[in-house]
Amino acid sequence: MITVYGFGKVTPQVIGITRDLRVFWALEECDLAYQVHGLDDFAGELQSSDYLEINPFGKVPAIDDDGCIIFESGAIVTYLAEQSGRLMPSSGAERAKAFQWAFAALDTVETPLTEIAVIDLFEADAEWANQRRSALVKMARDRLEVLDRTLVEKAYLLGDQFSYPDILMATSLHQVQHTDLLEAFPNVVSYLARCEGRPAWRQCLGTYKQRLAEAARL
Image (cartoon, rainbow, N blue to C red; front, side, top):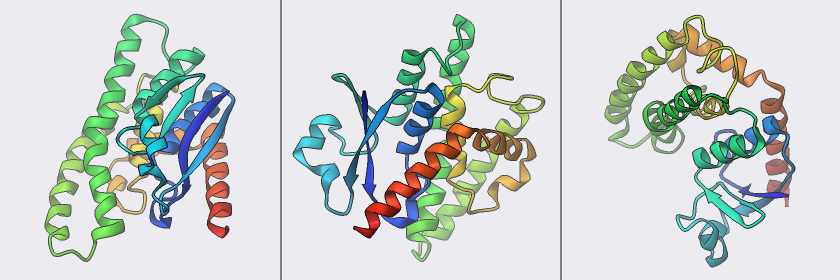
């Protein structure tokens, strides 16, 4: 059984946008059995010597699949798609496009969105925040405009079929749902709604929130 190292306790501001959710979503889509090893961020467990043997950067998530240890959410989601035979296109050309969109989600689209979320959640009152946020919003809009054009008459990034880069893209977009940033991009809004309407997402998000809520009461 796959062991997922995810958050056991974490600051409430980031519940629902942590990157371990990508892994839980992929596991649900791929119908793979797993167990959760929750790490207490407040207690410093991410920096413990035991966990640094799993992920030397002290970040979440990571997985242990029968001794095969992998960290970085994008790498894990790709691995799960490969191992399960789901969410991964079969043809070489389509697989290359899937890799392309996985990198685009994590390197191009997510970068300004994550910074915006961090500012809004943790640095909103800082003197530098407004100026930096304005620049990030412009960058994000430029990239979302490209994504919006890409999604004209396409249900998902590769066409009609949901695939693993959609998990990475949707969770990147999910970080800024507390803002009005997406509203100018109707194809992106519709795309995100389709992705988040999938039963696997609703299942993993509900289980995740319940687990963290129970841990917070302890």
